Length: 237
Image 1 (cartoon, rainbow, N blue to C red):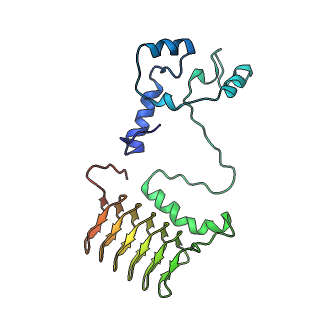
Image 2 (image 1 turned 120 degrees about the horizontal axis):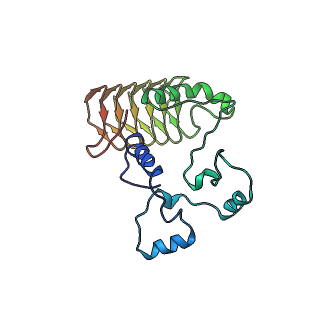
Image 3 (image 1 turned 90 degrees about the horizontal axis):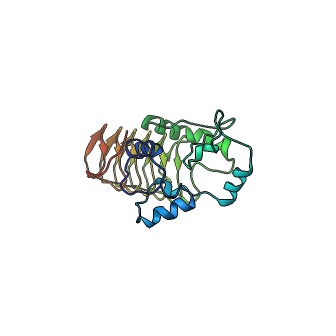
């Protein structure tokens, strides 16, 4: 399903899906005869069922099979609906439940510890990253593709995404930095999440903050425990 109006998964998308599961089926779920009759009445707005396409061969295999997903009645598998929920059972490896900002930050902090087990060839600092000789990057941090780290910077217990620019005398600790973020000279970032395309101007000080995508934090400003997003956007904590 695609909608530019949805800004929150939990606040908008999930309630929409819950409402839709109890709604009457659209023309995409009806038989061909009913669908043709429905089309004659006029065009309908696009809904979630419009994107729930099924393969004809898969439908034929299900029709010829004795398998069913439920017991107690003679209805078709899945009771004829195209909307389903699947679960993957994790038997081995690494799995994190990330449903809050705190758990998301913690999962990212643990990532450097897991990288050697996931891939022996993967380096915590991408080979294409440009790291100045006088910068300090902790062994518990990661630096992404094509990121530039200038002189006299300090990065500890943090994840730095791809194509970021970290200028001189920047300090980053216990933070998650997504891609295409720019840090001007002298910034100090602690315990924060900076989303893609943000610009942190010269001398800004952030502690325990969440900065939305493409946001600009003013020079020499100080923010503690704040959510910095545009007035027309919704971001969940």
